[in-house]
Image: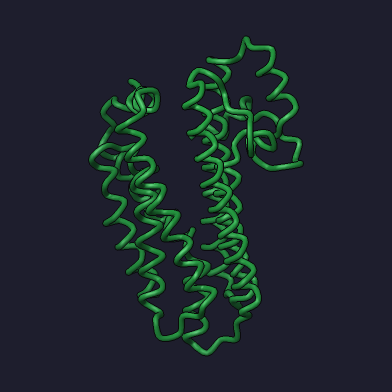
Amino acid sequence: MSYLLLLLAISFAVSAVGWIYFIYFFSIGYGLAISVLAVASAVIFRDVVTLPVLLLCGVLFVYGIRLALYLFLRERKSPSYKKILYQPDNTQKKPLFAMFMIWISCALLYVGQISPATFYLYNLANGVAVSEVWAWVGMAVAALGVLIEMVADAQKSAAKKVDASKYVSTGLYRIVRCPNYFGEVLMWTGSFIICFGASCTLWQWVIASLGYIGIVYVMFSGARRLELRQAEVYGKDPEFQKYIKSTPLILPLVPIYSVAKHTWLKG
């Protein structure tokens, strides 16, 4: 249990960047926390770390650093993103209790997200039989997810340079409207898959499942916010209406075209 407390302390310390501006709890602080926690897990169990888990930790590190840097630069360079980031609802001072609850929730979630690899290594270090096959599968799926997210972000940036006023419907955006969110869901699915070969105990399954469910909820919540913003900007465009009615929101081939009415996804 001491290793989890250490990871939680690290998560609290890194995500504390949100005290500068509370949105950072979910954005820059999120990326930094995931990258540092991934490295910390590999270092804590360095004596038993296996190649696929080490590679997974590397994938999560690259993902987190890239996300934090991407968001930092976008905030500095994109007037439209800055306008969204600093809208009145976000700049309004939050009650101290609410800030603490957000900080605590984020720190716990981030530990839960990286816990599958940690549990795998902990159980291995304690002589529990684990399956390296599941570790390789999980790592490969996670790496594919990061690749999809990187390609989606690059395609969106390229399309916006051509016409910043138009929604993106090319490349991966032909398949789903939020391919970057799909990539992240896929990445965390790969991470979670490792649990199937980690001989997890009940409480380990609970922590890992809560982390996975939590980030999937966050992704759909983010997709809902994007859907509502796009509806305000492009809602009267017939081509946009045709696009959103024929292109799934996040998951390819899964006919979920809208979550706007699902207020329980409001984050």
